[in-house]
Length: 500
Image (tube, rainbow, N blue to C red; front, side):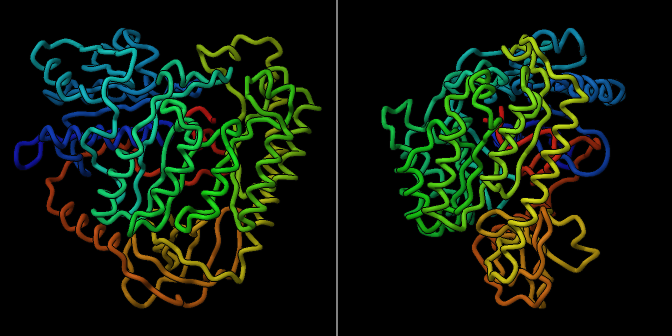
């Protein structure tokens, strides 16, 4: 239903990685700039946009299932439009309209800025508009944005990827790496801080390859140090790096820049040199563990997470044991662990020696059990530490029942803490003592030691007031967008778009 002012309501449904989440923020900004209002809780929306992912084998089944649910909704809702964008749209193109002819617009990863015009054209011409560009036309960060968080923000520093991993289709869909100019990145961060943001995450398919398009091998470490000089920016993170490009100057920049957090997501994928070669991963076990050792020497408190694929074609029991060996030695804080699934269009999907499902499942269970034990042991080391927690919104599902609030420690661990007597807002910080550790979170059950009101909390409060005055929209019971939640070890999707 349209808003009270006559504006059309919209809902964006996002699948996949942080890059997709950030693209969805751009899509929302474009739509609001064009006069749409974000959907609320009742009725049917005037527009539903699916921002898709092609990483998983059943990505198309998920999309077509949701499109099927919308077909009768659209029939009864005159003027409703449906748009499909993202990686699956880039890959399948005309197939989407052939399978779901009630879709109005199909657009790719390179032309999200065209969505409002395509919607208008579809309405006028009364037929589906399919527009897929083969190369990036406008860097997404130049587009309007409706950010989901008032206190933390994604900042894309590059798009695309130059790697050729055999399990990943992302380079074919997002193209070769293109870097933003450092000045543009820093200007965006400064503008965000001016709006109240105190935490940014630098984002790229292969974030630490930044500079390859600029001709500067140390561009990423220089960017980290330059961002560290921005007044008011308290926390800097980045995701996801690639071991091949992770150099000593980046480790030094992390260790020497106070507001760069001692947190690192370093995808392993496999501990077997033979499997890494088959994956076309340009590092081997020794190189990976060498990086982990250097990071821990420079930052003993660093929390390191990873991605691991179990059951890649041809993986033997000996190969899997090499992965278990690396997990034992690296002692990851947590791991996003995947059972290999065929990704149509990738070389690995055509490889012989696909590992039987039962074997993959058994290995997966063993890896989960080991990592669970390590995660718990590593979290227990946090008990007794006094930490400053950035209060988050929606992180603690049981907060209302337990009279707690939740937030993130500097190393990104999730912390649930006793609700303080004085008011505290998302974006503010609290200082607490950790009293208990579980494998996936920490507890601070004692009194809050300090509360610090921040510009981020002010921004959240202001946004909450503005949001309350907006016309009500709708929801479909479909997935919503926002900063990705921490996934359990058994999650089917990880931190990087292709599991870099």
